[in-house]
Amino acid sequence: MALAADPSSPEFLAARHAAMWAQDGFQGVDETDLSGPCGHAYGIRKSAWLTTAFRNQYRPESLNVLPQEVMECLKDAEVTNWVLMGLYGYVGYLSQPRATQVVDVMIPYSQKKKAMKAIGRRWPTLQVRQLSQVVRFQDPAETDHEGQLVPVIDWMLPWSPFQSMILSDCVIEDPKSKHRYPAIEAAIVSKYAALVSPHREARKKRQDAVDFEGIVETTHARINMLKLKELAGLVWGGGADEIERFVKLAIDGQTLPY
Image (cartoon, rainbow, N blue to C red; front, side, top):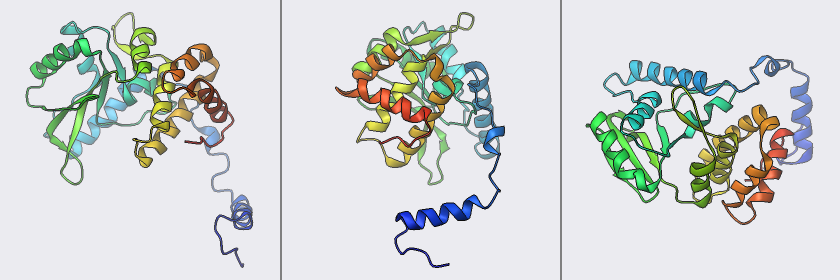
């Protein structure tokens, strides 16, 4: 079979599509996957279990810092107005949890010193690296395949107005555990901000896009569009209009233009 020389040409893509359509290897598989949000309690527990299993097998010397422990540490130290972010923060909005090595928590600048002292008391061997927008806690026994230290806790500081609004108006607190999670709108806009940032690495943006689409897919019926647009408008001037377009594209299964 002769193919077009240009693999991006319509002729090449049409030929590939026809050839793959004739094969049923993937047919019907996706329809059997879970499609609803897994929930914060289950999602965090499953993600933490996956991470713990990895560390027990490949990083037995690591401290195995877990999100539940970090949140309890903040509560015990009476740190206020924080919210769990990153994968652990929004995993409850995804249908399928996955592992992560870092616990991300956003805290206001006013609570930075108190939070750092609390972590230092709880895990005194962690190494601290301070940047303008984040404080990273690294475990000497937690490294990547090249031997570089991997952060196990990130204190995210609200460097943007949209993050300040998250802390003030987009946090859900569990009435029993007092654990604090981002509202749906906060999770979506945080992924959006990462997608449109020129400072974000391309490989990370691809995962951001998957997560954005996954969150929207399971929660779109519950999104407060007014709050979503208000929050996205604080990312940049055109964010309010663009976030609405991004959400529609995600619902329709279309590619995000990031």
